[in-house]
Length: 119
Length: 89
Length: 157
Image (cartoon, rainbow over all chains, first blue to last red; front, side, top):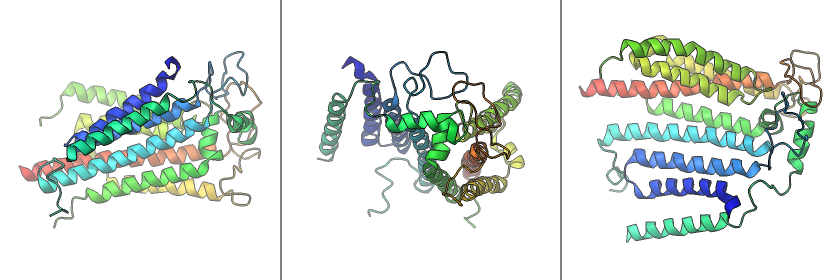
């Protein structure tokens, strides 16, 4: 269990984000919760691609004595995490612009009052 | 009633998450690395770049970067459409 | 809200050129060092947001129009797509500049080497177009959000 601590950190971030999404009423707090949940998932994705005592897969001025395929970390999870971070930024921008418009229309940011479709 | 359902969903989800990561492989030993070994060995020869991560992002997996650029463009277009100022006259 | 003080304005104007130079360096050397188009574009956009916070949105909206930013972002996206289409004689995203003696066509020797900027094929051009797109997109988002908040505050008063 002691060698699984990075995975525990990523799951702890995901649980904190999920608590903020499920139990809070303010729209801005829900947006912060979505952002924390996304950070936890990205951290989990990037800790899957690590090798023991390895350096980054970049050939410019390599330190002496690194073996070429076995001394470098895997590059494909890093590329997928980059795409995921940019998509998280795009989703957060749209959520915040909708929150500004909702506040202009209803006058409050409580998620139980802004249910105009239900009545 | 509603609060009890939300609490049950939260507890079940967190238990499933924690019990999953306790059965993963130890940190730092990936199982099958044949694709990444091929990419690290041949990235300088085929693409001509020193950076293996950039060659994966733009050359070996260029379609994902195309989709990501589309998502960024759609988000900017959506924000500029929602927050227009001269639409109230 | 009162106007920001003179100390904040002076320090922001001093730090902004260094931020922009560092961001453009990270974009241009994306095929040699860690970095690339998305990372360098985020750095330059954060420099523009620093100016926006220090000077207020009325000052910045006089110099940076959002229609120009929209044209820049569309130009970046079109450049990226046309670079992908130019290698269509073999496959869709073919790296047609690596190995030929055009601008970026040298193949570096295998193993550790000090980086040469002449390498990389079509990768530095793609880095530059994606960096331009990210700079224009993120700056347009923050500019429109701050202008909307300011116009709402003036209408309510």
